[in-house]
Length: 193
Image 1: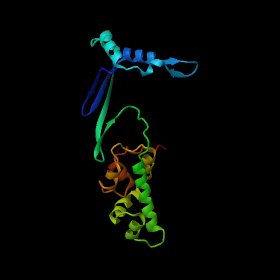
Image 2 (image 1 turned 90 degrees about the horizontal axis):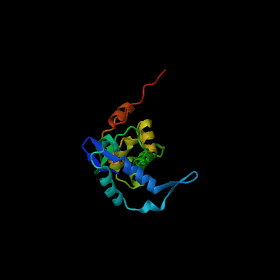
Image 3 (image 1 turned 60 degrees about the horizontal axis):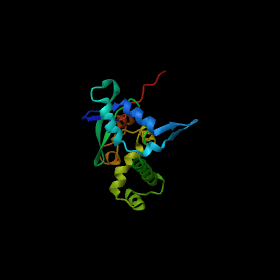
Image 4 (image 1 turned 30 degrees about the vertical axis):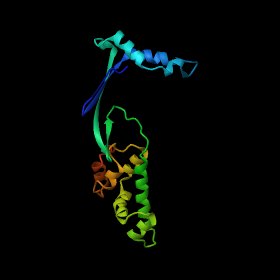
C-alpha cells in the first residue's frame, strides 16, 4: 500500500498505491446494517498483498498513486527529538501531564509564599521536599500568560515546549506578549471591532 516514503530534513513524502489500499479495505471490512464490522480476513498478513501489488500495478502506473507531501520539523524535546509534521489540520493530542504538574507546582509554591504565614523560600522547599533553587526556578511559571496556560491544559502548546525548556532553558519575561513570542506560540488574532 505504501511503496515509498521519502524523509528529508524539511519534509516527508509518502506514496500510496490506491488500488492496494482499496483492495485491503474491501478484504478487511464488511458493511453491516449500520455498523462497519471487521471480517475474518482482518488478521491476515499484508506481505501477500505487497507481492500481489508489485505484480499488478508496477512502478509505471502513476494514475494509481497518491502522494502526500507535508512539511516537517525536528524539535528538541528534553533529551530526545520529536518529529513534527505540519499538516493542514492539527490532530488533537492529549495534554502533557508533566507540563501541567509543573504549572500546578509553581502555583502551589506561590500560594505557600503568599498565604500570610510568613514562609520563606527555604520553608517552602522544606514543606514540598525540594531544593530551594527548584522553588526559585519554578516560581516564574506561576506568572505565565493565561493563553499559554490554557494551551498547555488543552494540549495545544508548541511541540518543542517541555518542562526542561520551560523551567530551566529560558529567562521568562514578565510581559505576556513577550512570553507568547519567546515560547513559539502563534500571535493572538487582532480584535475586530
